[in-house]
Length: 190
Image (cartoon, rainbow, N blue to C red; front, side, top):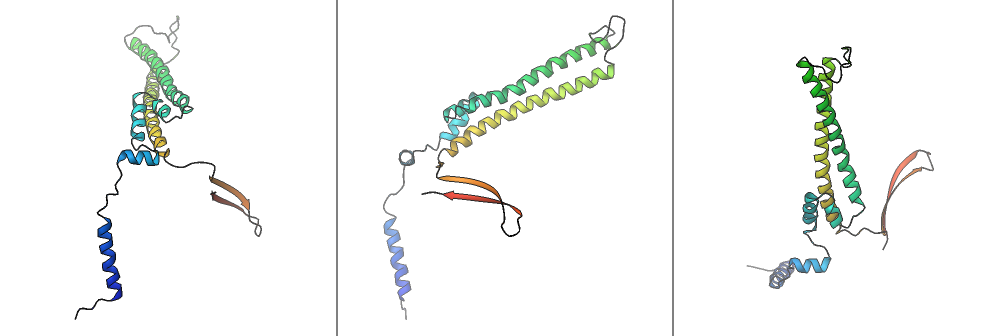
C-alpha cells in the first residue's frame, strides 16, 4: 500500500540530516563578529552621537580628519549670515519704531529728507527677517546633515573599497554610426 520512491527516501534522509545539524550551536556573539570581521556594528551610532554632541567629532571618530574644516566652514556660513541679517534687521526695526513715534531716525537727514521711506523700512524688515530665518533653518539642516554624514561614513567603513574595484564612466563614439554614446565600465580585479 505505502511505497517509498527513491526521491521520497532521499527527502527524508535530508530532513533527518538537517535536524541533526541544528543541534550544533553555530551562532556568533557580537564580540566574535567584531573579531572576525573587524567591524563594530555600533560604530555608526557612536559616530552620529559624537557628531551631534560636537560638530566634526563624528568625522574625527571615523578618522576622516579632512572633513572637519568643511563641517565647520559649512556651519559658519549660515551663522555669519544670521548675525549680519539680524543686526541689519534690528537697525531697520529701530528706525521704523522711531519714525512711528515721530522721532528722527538714522535714515533721515538733518534737513528732514528721508533716505528710506516708511514702506521701504517695512519692506527691508520683512526681507531681512526672512533671510535671518532662512539662515537659521540652513544651519539646522547642515547640522543634521553632518550628523547623517558621520553615520553613513561609519556604515561604509565595513565595505572593501580599494584600487581593485573601480567605476569609470566613459563617453565614446560608435564606429558604425559615429554617434556619441555614454557607457559605464565596472571592473573587478582579483
